[in-house]
Image (cartoon, rainbow, N blue to C red; front, side):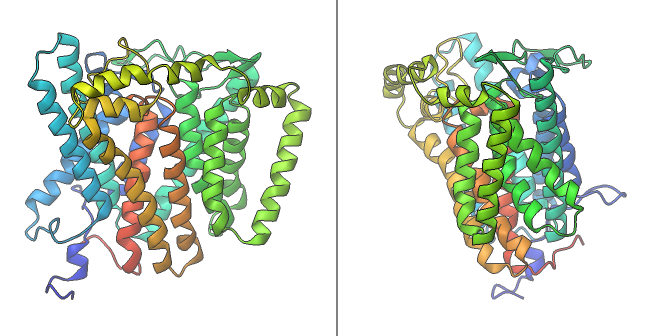
Length: 440
């Protein structure tokens, strides 16, 4: 019992499943991950636009499930349970609602009205997946199961990207899924004479985003998850690392470097030495087997790049729009791509949701980062203690790359960001449980 007189297990009881088969939140989140990464990101229900991706629609069901569970509970615990990730998610949702009210209070063209309404559906999907992960994962063993699925599906996602790189074939571009329309994204691009893989993502930036966020988790499980077969543990690490190197993308390189920098302090000197040797060998193999790739990668970080100039030239545009609605913004989703592509989600959020919304978005990643590092001290098992830095590194990579493109407009990028933030919430919740949480 806690001082409040409420049993610990009652305050922290995870969202239960409403079916006789005993399926739990981990099952639902695994299906969500499959929909997110297996179905091409440029497929959606046409009438719903960006909110119509199958994974996003599935996340809305997760949101309804989470809401119904807490509404029908005989002993509400949300007010008593100070879950940091849940609190900042509520703040983000409140900021989105405030920006919606601000947008609805002014005269809008039809395209912006539609975007404003669909924006609320997207926010609900973000919240659904984060809250289900935060409150629904029942125990540490099931958390590990979900993370293994994250890594395995990430490895397959990267393997498809490698296949695209070496063959020049998309393999998913002409895939026809009944009921889903195809956007004008998804085709393979070229840079420096090399194919820019996308796997099932909409473009190379979203592809790099997913790779960078999964890699630190995959590395941690490969090093410490001794209960899994060796090949299965290292398969995601190998494919994701190689795919990031061959992605011909600055974003992928930067995302991986950010993740490694956060992970380094948690590694032993021996692991650091081995990682250094492997990195040198891998770079040597790429130099020998893919002629010209190292020079192309070096060229990405030098000279005048039109994409960088386009980003910096947008600051005046951003300043003008922010000046009109500085605190609450003009409405989430209403700064349409045809106005200008900013290639920076933080700037888009500043326009759409104002200073309040931008602070809330940053808080989701920031609080997840801090809580996952703080919670690790409460775990005695090596693999669980190492998960704190891994989740923090994943969020750090995602937070940095969010500033490189309009991440919340891309289903896979947004889905991974809020899912990992939710996993940080689950990791925080379980820090004092000693594995005792079970479904009643």
